[in-house]
Length: 68
Image: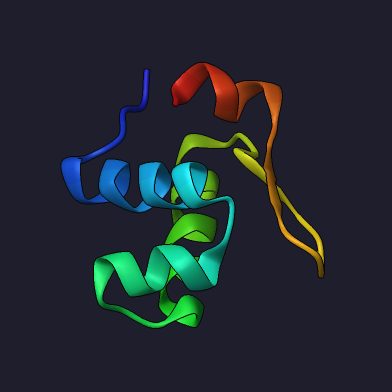
């Protein structure tokens, strides 16, 4: 079973808490683009989609809710 590393977990939890890449990026002190790329890498490594991205916001998938 593949697991989240602590840095991955921080990225995912900030996005899940804020439901926004921009707000999470301010919280973590990185760019929203960096968070988006980091989350995409996490999802690829785990082979599961954790969030649904839209132009209006971010919503957790069922797997994302289970992980949060």
